[in-house]
Length: 201
Image: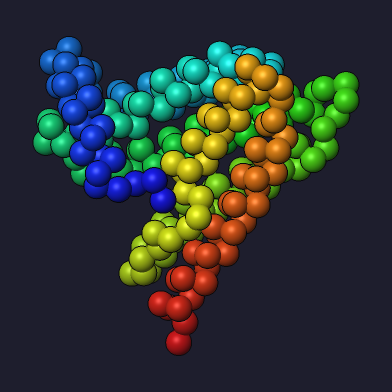
């Protein structure tokens, strides 16, 4: 997992001043969450689905920063709570789906249909959604479920690297999708086994 205290402390030096500035401008944490989601959907629909991976990757990386700002803004404004967490998690799934659907659309529409990329995109999307669902369901039953080799941060990082490399050199996204499909399935299995050990009688 990429989430750790040292990384959060380092990023806070840059995120906190910007978050304060946005709050002074009247931007709410919920608005930042919506901006991030809608921007990701737009980039996916108009750039990634057409194979513009370099520009799409750059913009996607910038819009991903909203995930850092909305939570910080909520804490600073004293509005952090269950609603914000629910909205953020729900819209994250929309953003994830938009990216994989865009990639599926791009590869299924090519003259040289890349079947492996298409199938991998579907499997990766399913795995990403199941990874999130497994944690939510487990926690609703009183179990912890924070294990997994590829959570959202890892998936996003791998996608971004793939977009950058594909945009500058040659298209490696089919291989990235295969890797994401495999890692997502492994993560779901890890969570199933982890929760089973807690809940199975």
